Image (cartoon, rainbow, N blue to C red; front, side):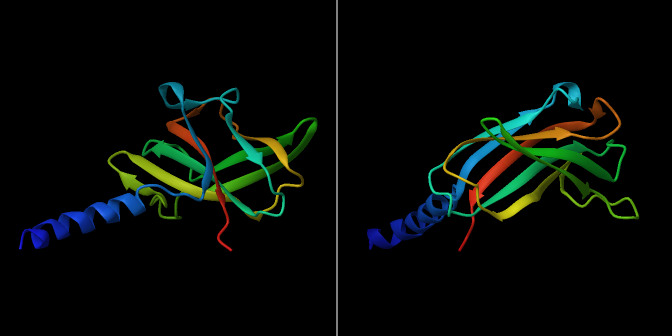
Length: 157
């Protein structure tokens, strides 16, 4: 009879164990912006070691801002570097709807976004890569951004 009392706790523990971490993530970095000001100099950097260039990856830009953020969008530059080789691309993300409602998930005064940069991306060759994101708005610093980051995950086949 005592085994039946333990069973619910065992099941709950298994749920937490198997859902606790995302094993797809190979890199996950977040940089807190000093005084909620994201300057051009505060570049977010992640390192990725690629062993198999046939493996596709999903790369995400993470952003968190306060409700006092002035704009409905954000422009960023995304760089993929390996040695002397560098690929760059500019992205624009819509953060708010036309009526001013934020698209991100809100908690108190903060709004959080996980935005796709590249999906099913295959790195050109094995090796170490540096991924870099920099804000590309006219304001420097960009006020009311609390943190930004990069997540790299293996793609689901």
